[in-house]
Image 1 (tube, rainbow, N blue to C red):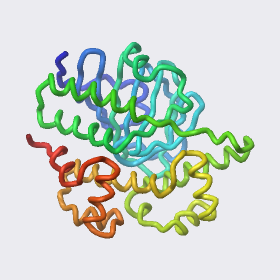
Image 2: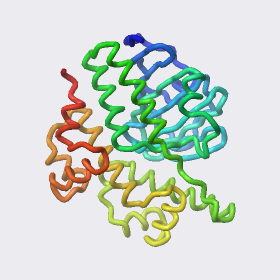
Image 3: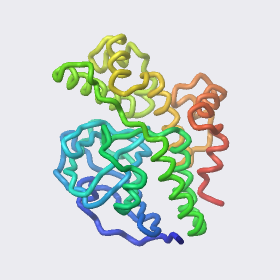
Image 4: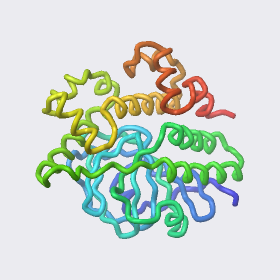
Length: 291
């Protein structure tokens, strides 16, 4: 099916809650994609709002707290979250405004085909390769790619999200009070690391002091809650930060290597290739606004 660019969409409840620059980007049969730049700066939870459709939201920059149907989690550029019609939505911005997300609204049938069944968490993570596919789709839309190509890329992205989405694990080994404390520790850690290059350049000891834990306790709890290590999570965010900077027009890999705490450009290239399957120079070409 062909895809077309849309005009200004109506502002739904989720859009009003974000108080951001909500504008249409791509639309094809049964799917609408919206680019969201959030200007909300309240550190406490705003809302409630209510989801009025099935959505897949992918975060490209920044980070924020989400509460969906009573489940609370931190959202960062390593993934996103799912909503279903009627979900109660709340949002908070402990690290300030400016987060950037892509909302993909799909029909109930398409949602069921790819994301059927109650997930252990509404929050999900995606691979670096899927993140590159996501950003490349938006770059193709900005430069006026053929509608057929946009529709094909969009369906491939949804397949990639469904295939690579890894839900965070429940901390089932802890008592309820300890599990809640562990969840808060992980949310605080994610907020520090998602706050920008300054947080990503902290040592493990400095990061642990910032969130009020010992390095050992932080490492153990983070792995128990998320299923991954702090190092792997930090590297993912560093690479997503580099990808967003390239998407925004920065073209100096040397500058980005320094800004995100890599030893040098070769180090950035190795980590980027391992996390996304592509060298940063190749990603820079994918994300170019001009054909």
